[in-house]
Length: 446
Image (tube, rainbow, N blue to C red; front, side):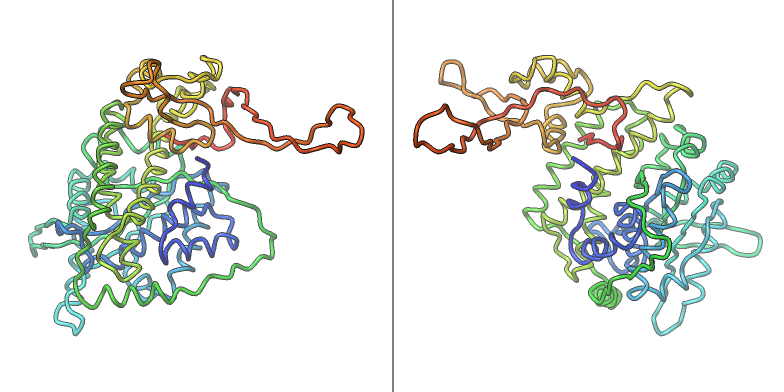
């Protein structure tokens, strides 16, 4: 699945509509714009919109891209342009810079609650951290033994506290939004495996971004009108809203959850620790997309769109972690699951490959469920049931290249008074080795 196809799958409801509308107006990666919108809009809904288990719907995102060409700041600017008419007041009054210690995080949330205690609107401790130089704070975070613990508690919506000689600060239901930027090189330097194993980073959804296009120097972006997002924000803030899956969405989420767990079981722990909460991340993203429609019942389409976004983040994590583990100066590419599938089919010269042979060749790299999900994201490979050799019993599952039909005009033999005709023919593409370094390395993992 290409990045364009992945982005199309992610776009759902008013949020997806707004991001698609701004795409021609910016050089930013559209998936980066979507990630920024999800982080900021979910932070605005936080506190009154919750999951059925009481947890917040806050979506925490990280844009990972090289300086200048990653267009991280451009993505954030485009997202603000989308959301300014809807939640501009929240962004202006509740956005804070990077915080790098547990006490300062607790104090900031506590002070916001204190400022609103007794007001007509009631207690409101919402805070949105936007840190465009995350690496600078990651350097300092390591010196504070409580920061990671308190950050995880905020994601879960559980109590945090800090006691000094002067006062005891307690925040019973922290409502924290979080969005940061980092370069891939800084990720490998400051996002350590020890912290990841402790769960500090599996609450985040990293998204690898790059410039989408070049626009003229004098281009002035025109941001779309977003009255639906404004109405949804007002609707969400009037009273507490509990988001639940409808029956069909629940079944789909169960399938996704099983696929994620199968995938995690085949990963090394140094990689799986970043994606262990992917199933809950799907719920959170789906809840935000649904709340933007002023609905509390999450349907399957919202879940599928959320799953597309979380899958992209999982692929981003795998790229970041594996690039970090790759020795400096090494040019050996790390193969993705789709690349390995194509290699196996090429080995069999394009012939049908049974599920058993495919899984045996992949070894611990994939399970039956993750293999099927990966093929679903590929345009040139399909999974079908073949006829059994005896014509009876279970039909074997096989993988093969997609057969494409092509219409061609051929000159017939010279026959008097018979005009040439168009004759359809079937063309089976020759197996092609995947390029060692693809134009965009974020090929489908699942």
